[in-house]
Image (tube, rainbow, N blue to C red; front, side):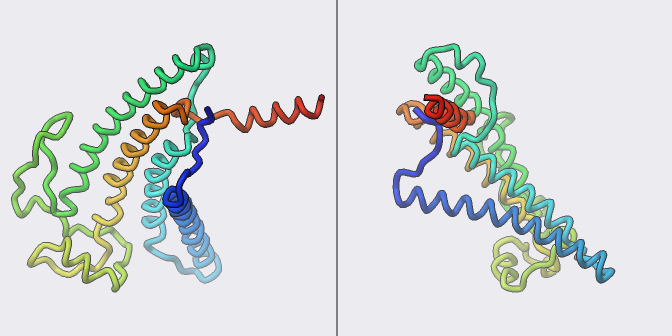
Length: 231
């Protein structure tokens, strides 16, 4: 069974299109911001002081969002020399073992991602060393919703909702974009990885996917075409 991802419902196709659009937008914005800054610097002797910080944030969003998307369409690379020597059933069993290991690792990452991001959103991190056992008791000064990015300006249309949600009472209004916004991709991206791994496990169990790594259908298609030509 092919490992290529093909949405089977209208909702699945819509979500797939949205995900691809988000990835394209993130990549496009990185290129655009960098290009504009280069033009400003070498042609007008000026620069966007926030361009590097924004580009780094967009790159982080692209990577974390892209990892989950990679699990969805089985684009991650892997070594299958041993797998190819086994029967289809054995391949499926080993793939499920790999998924289980990835799920445990992603669950550990999810705890770390939440614990890192939560104080910036004025939320409590979890207790427990490996897996969450509850939530910490936080003092008012432990919350860091007031922390801004270094240079990225805050769009005015976002000021009211962000200050209402994250700015502690008594703090000065935001001058820059609060760091809770770019850091939100950390728990969101890891949560998407968990979700896509569970999806992959279901597809492997039902026989709609063979493993977690990139399929060889392109290779197989080239070989089939060559055989047809020779014939």
